[in-house]
Image 1 (cartoon, one colour):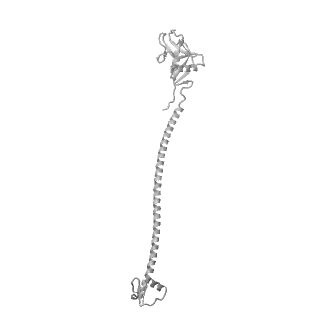
Image 2 (cartoon, one colour):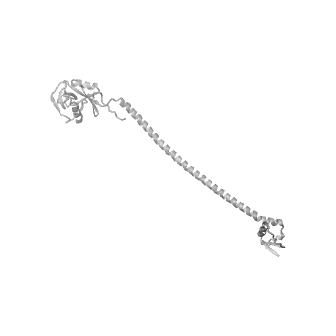
Image 3 (tube, one colour):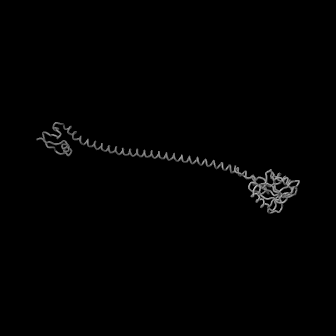
Length: 266
């Protein structure tokens, strides 16, 4: 009788310590005549599937470990790339911040230079102001661009002229109705006459100011001895808001005039 078994069955029977039926011929399905191989070879054949299975399991485990390590490495690589990207972004942000701060520092430096210049100009102006007592000397009256002084002594016209010259000025000159109104208000407290810098040598001559310029017509009307002729000439004075003509040899108070020392920004 010939029993036909697979090698797997043969080996499993040996592992379970079962009795194998006696047979003159054992044939494996793979075509191997078991009776034709030695017992050692049979044992090796029985051991082979088990060894392959173990190796297969080991390989699967190793593959799983490798896969896990691969995932870990991929995660580490991704984290490194993200860190590098974050670092690059941080560097760009830091660079932008530095440029912004540098620009602001430059602007502040310009502002500081301007403030220092303004401070120097202000100090210079304060120095000038400290030495500047006002547009007019003491006891002089300030009106627009001129200073006016009402004398406390009575002199003839020529002496009055010399007195004004000694004070770096000249006798009163009226150029406008505004000047005339100011003088009227300033002399309203006194009823005394005050010489001004207007005169003429003869009645036939024109009225002239000290610098030789003629009197503007219709600025004011002269009263008094307008047509009289005097050896020393005819001079004008103001009294009570009106302008009169009189002999220059007579004595009266006088009004001196000079330019105001105005503080102008340089």
